[in-house]
Amino acid sequence: MNNEKNKIKIGMVSLGCAKNRVDAEIMLGSISEAGYEITPFEDRADVIIVNTCGFIDSAKEEAIDAILEAAEMKKKGSARAVIVSGCLAQRYGRDILKSLPEVDAVVGAYGYSHILDAIESVLGGGKTVRTDSAEDAGEILKKGNVCYFDDATDFSLEYLDGKRILTTPASYAYLKIAEGCSNRCTYCAIPGIRGPYRSRPVEKLLEEARVLAAEGVSEIVVVAQDTTMYGTDLGDGSGLPALLEGLDVIDGIERVRILYLYPDEINDEILNAVRNCRKTVPYFDIPLQHISDRVLKRMNRRGNGALYRKVIDDFRKAFPECVIRTSLITGFPGETEDDHRELKEFLKEYKLDRVGVFEYSREEGTPAARMKDQVHPATKKRRHRELMEIQNAVSFEKNKNRIGKIYDVVVDGVSDDGMFYKGRSYMEAPEEDGYIYFAAKEELKTGQTVRVRIVVAEDYDLVGEQIAR
Picture (cartoon, helix red, strand yellow):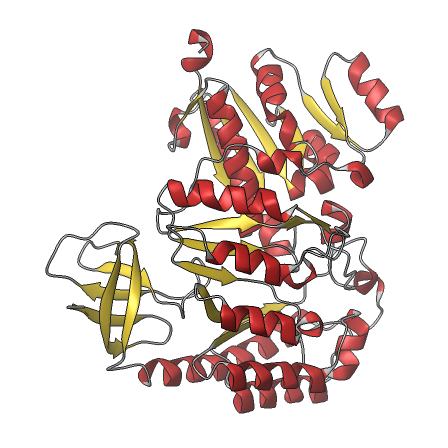
């Protein structure tokens, strides 16, 4: 190990989705293997990496705030350099360097494998710049800076095979099965940022899962921009059912959870795989975005309201105790009061277990951003409030119905006040849903599974007590 590197501390702030978290963990793995020390304390880091999300306005604002905080530490002398990586860096790399001179390097989503070069560059006084223009690359190199010329159509997924340093509790870890997206929803910038959908080979995914299990991970959370599309681009017949079957026989893995199942691609094969795989839990995250046919068409979403309702009915028939989660967009361009009313009635009728509602964010470069009939911000806020009022009532009602029931709960840690343990049953996805807080008469370890009886219901969280098996 290089003694000089061993004295340099690297800190990282990772924002955004679980897929972004996996990228951060892989970067941390390569940084650690190179001999640098990783610190969880930003104010003690020589180099601060801000791994950003750039999906919607609120995510951009969060990323800019984090960059400014890191820049402030650099001004105070506690940090020597600031590197910005991830989706915001991929999308606005040159703007970041131009408007934030405190930033020393930009490494976009296509440059993760170059993070060590970026660190060495900034420690040596140079700037690291990502560009998609060969002409710009030449100018950047002439100025003595390091440049990564990344062609989005030739983005290798080999970096995902690297060693990971987990940033989640020992109870769970994410398994990123694909990169990019080919759905082309009119509101979404992800295909432009991350490129088209590319699946990872099933053998590599199962090997990664075995490594995670050996490290003590008991729950695997399967993620991609669209998990139902997994394998369709590989040409070898593999798909999500085969992956679930492979995960089902890995020793140490007790629970497999799938997120981001697109409704129009759910079929009997996937339903049967979930039914037959003992470890795959009946928790279905299905991003609907809307229920109005007219709005769905403008969003360029495949399927329609009738299909979406049928998918939910099919899941509930096949798995009576299942949990259904979705995300919705309110205030999409051209959304009328009738469209909004239909969405409200849908929530009241179908009583979904988990719902995330987002106000439409006008993302430059997307077809929806160019639509003329944009909804007024005040209207979006009002519609968001009305939808959430409905869902809050549904959530509380469902939680009350869980009082007295007993669940296997995996321990994620302790509450902020230290009075309770906190954990999740199959009905709670990590970082997405509420917790089950519970008292225990014995000392428990993170990742341990215990039996808990629910005694108190709140809007989103539950309170319980540990009972003997």
